[in-house]
Image 1 (cartoon, rainbow, N blue to C red):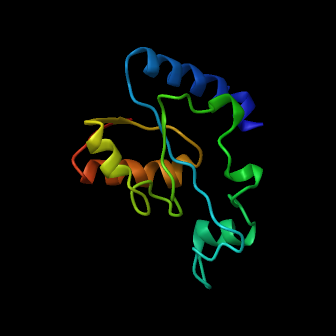
Image 2: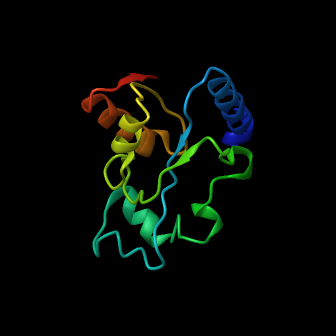
Image 3: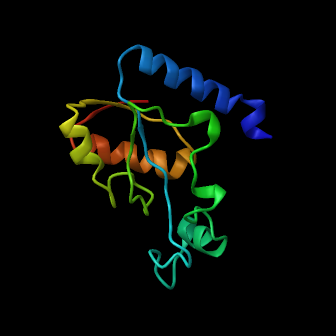
Length: 132
């Protein structure tokens, strides 16, 4: 109900389309865990405990896929290996951004208070200009 009442997906599509039109590089960071969620420790707590218990974001399952309305285009980048809340922690996102000479960051996504916020804070710490 929340996503529908706020038009979250439609608004996200519009934002991404406008960013592409303005020449921005679009980077997708899906979080994916292998079956069994062994990437997460035996005694997780907080958000990751719920992820492991609920078998969320499992590779090959619908929860790990980018939703159809946000399907990456050929010029987009899909970063692989995200198994942590922060998009930088378990990936080569920083390398990809520096290789593409990205200096400014605008973030959006699912679980704003976890993944998006963690990635935003790390981007700032790494010297990127973060716009919220």
